[in-house]
Image (cartoon, rainbow, N blue to C red):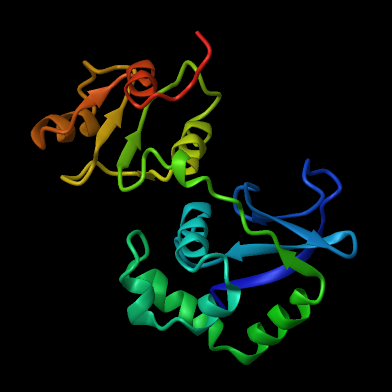
Length: 203
């Protein structure tokens, strides 16, 4: 079974309730519920991540029924998903026991759809790679959140489709820097990136 839902005490989290990745305890989406439990979406035996979950939620407008009824062909065509993840997802959603667990879970949850300000989607259609240490953010995940909130995408590899590589050490001989130079992908420091794309930050 590649994925499953379980209950967990959420009193230690800052949100009243949320859906989190069991692997790294990162919040995927907030929920409202009627008791002190919330679902944990555990991604077992697959390479699903918080990012993958967000991609699916956004693509299907946070509509669980649409996700459940999607076929492998539809899912694999979504950028960032691919055939392997699509197959794992559809396999999970075709299992009667899994569907029964989801139906039980839905009794306690009301999905809160994020309100997206279209005017704030300034990075829509752009793809970024973040590497190295940062100065204005505690972690690369924090900067990733900022990029995704503005409609951008963060990937792990530099390709011809990468808008820019964010690396405070632009003279580094790392594989990512070499690849960016080879593909003529701009390499920007964290601060240059924030200035270029008009993202507020503290000096």
